[in-house]
Image (cartoon, rainbow, N blue to C red):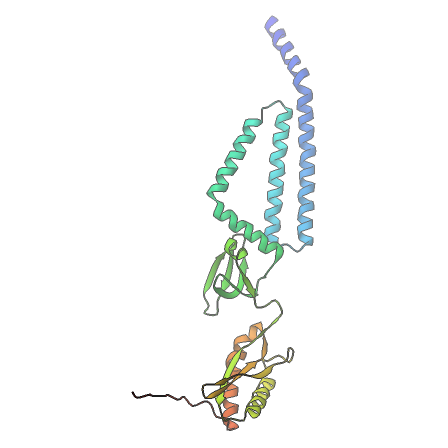
Length: 269
């Protein structure tokens, strides 16, 4: 009986000393979970209002929620009298080790976040980056996927993309098609320009606005080079590039506008 009384006394002393801490820690944990969920929902709504990509919304929401929960657990453990200094040091060292091991992947992750937040391009845009040109088919956290004109799939690391020059051909909704056509030096240049302009205006893929133009680009080497500058939508860029050249060649033939004649000068010593 004396031992039972002793253990009971010790238990009651422990409850008296530790009970308020346990109740306080439990209350903080429950309230903390409510606050964490509230903050996570607030962050998700803020990201959604800014039009952030859904995949990035989910990732950042989970990251914020997980980080806050870890801080909450450390705080609760400290309230219970558990030494958290060593735990925090271990977590910090582990985070540093993981960061050093995955620094390339983290750079790609950071690049993906920047791309999804600031949106220098979107899915469906025609872009050029790191020497590659193609349509953007996917924007992932770590990579951007392009489909080239040769129907090749190119996977670009987001770290490299975000740190390099990005040329977005689709941002304004149209592209200028640069075509050069040469005619004989003794041709009627005004007539050639007029015929080329008629071809541009009759083409179904050439845009009326911005207006196309035909100008003399160069005179020399036994020819006159015309700069043909129509505008086309991104989807019809190659249609204009190929069809306009063919139509101009046909129109020049029908209007007796001769092309340049190659010449070779041979000097005998």
